[in-house]
Image (cartoon, rainbow, N blue to C red; front, side, top):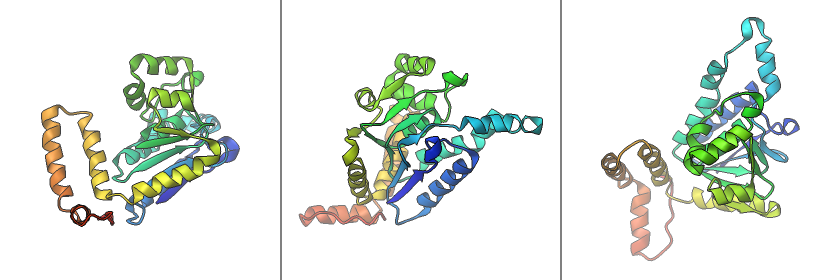
Length: 252
């Protein structure tokens, strides 16, 4: 298991350029680490992430020539991070320990599974600073909540508590604050002991199916199943079933 901690607690883990660069590098390292069969993303202190550090936006605007444009900044930072989260063929857990706002909420939504502390909340903060939801938010949230409810949250800058997010289908489970770290560790250990290749291929299939029809999905599943059927974990799963014992998956 690999844990990536967003670590600027004095700013509620708001993203500046340095932190975005470090986050991207940490994702790349975890994706390549064969021993890291599950990735956990969480925040230091009392927040998951408050989103983009607005002081960094002002600093860029005051640079000679106006600095990097919004589009360039998104394309070279957040967009790459979100694409990495969706394409890493390992389970990615968003351990939402506190507030997840703006791009911080987008990062949480891009994870495969979200487990939230009872102290967590989700805030669609973009309209409050005159901006459009970004970092994949307009792709993820309407699929989870439907158009009307997602748009209302964007337009009003609404906040969802952890329990409201659970009821809406945004998170998989909510855990009492005192039990949160243990619950995250237990879930991560369970996923890390699972057949990693099969879970990765499942994620690939689900990502592709969102943009395909049924016939295409059937064909794509068959192709991926051919790959999964050649793994050591498949052979181990069959052997364990026939021998009536728990499987010992290696992730290969």
